[in-house]
Length: 509
Image 1 (cartoon, rainbow, N blue to C red):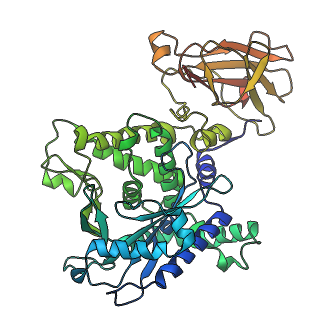
Image 2: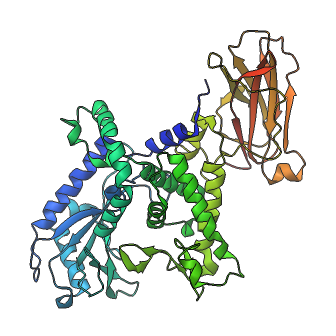
């Protein structure tokens, strides 16, 4: 049976499916703690104190998402900082990098899973277990002691393509504190209820509610960031602009700056997208930089007077997350605002009541990675019925789809991709007692249907309302995401409807 839910419920369910499970999180933290202890017990000539080792990134912020298998990054990332006790002016970044690497290699297990030296980090690739992979990035660093450095700033090692080492200032601990402050009111509002729920479901892992880690408490801000990151992965996966997709740090910074303690995911998303869209005017070729606009209209994303872009780290003003947006004819800026348009189409312009299974599968368990199945059912060419819609909760209506093969008719699910040239059959089932009338609506989208003048959208009465078997036949003619919906009319009112059954037609799989 098709389950219709509110858009907020659908967003929440989709976001929860992105969570790391409590057991996998426990495994990740055990691996972090083992590495932390190993690094703390090392010998680092010239260091004045035991290394400080701490988490950074999504595991620290509570915005981690289940890996997307079709992405280039198909593992959980455990990002940690290893801050040695050297004075920056008395050592070299190459020395710090090698000391941390040498210490990691002293453990035989770590040596076997250690990747080649990276630009900034040492990376360990853990074996895939239960279909889930982990990799751990260890960032060597020392304290940044320049006069302009913010509290908690570090000087991290950086190796360029020619093998030259430099220092890069960063502030992951300060950023986490800034993020927690933005998230604090909502976190305090949610933590007791959510921790109790996790404890009730995971009593084998925790002795009390207080033992439940904070990462399992998710505010609307954290849920929004999870959805944004997954939506980005789906939309850009295997596309020709995948290399220009927004980085997670940009998403986290901008989302936190926009957050106003909204109590729902949808309101958080809606306000965030509206904020992003306001900044898209800067893509215009005729845009002229005006200092007065920076503090008002374009405070989040700024196109500077020299044509470059700026998204500053609030806890490390010298760090610009958009420092490459001007490259390749502003390719990253264009990709970002293209993505913002997709966000509005896929997550904002959706019905208040939507099909739960379709929404979740399209965002989390994607059938086809090259395009997100349509979620915006509010299109201009869709007709409205001439009867009031007063859905009766006692009644239900569902659609089952089949397509014809060379041998038999085979079931297919809403949103599942199909090739062109297939005959389709839709069966409507309802428990509304007769007499009633059935109406169908078929809506096409996409350029092929538009070019052929076949966008459709009309509502038509079923030919034989007295039949016990209610079928409709169609064919897969035009590439795109289309849908079929059925309405049950009793006493001149719509008392049940099926919800949109999506037919995703593709030229190839």
